[in-house]
Length: 97
Image 1 (spheres, helix red, strand yellow):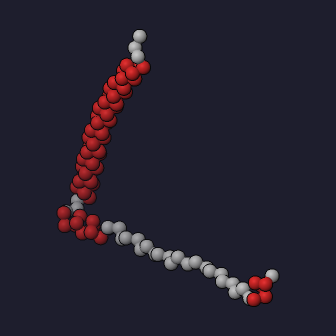
Image 2: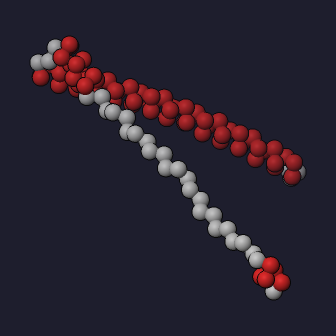
Image 3: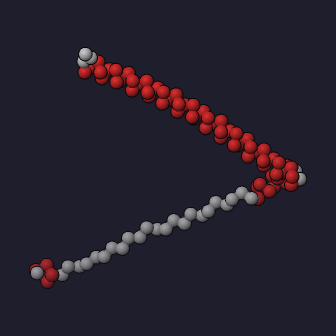
């Protein structure tokens, strides 16, 4: 009959093996995600080039269009933080009460 220590060591070995399996799956998923992102970016770039070719725009016109169409930063208005303080003066009469 195995001792409690042997049972714990067996459970620890199993947990370590499970963790290694999870890490391997995670690495595979991360690699697939990178590949998916690269594919999407490639297709988006191809689409952009095709749109440019359909529009019959040369590189200088495209550059001019892209430079004028850049979004302008939105001005951030910082509202000053105000705190209303109410001060009361205690008179001698009120202190006596």
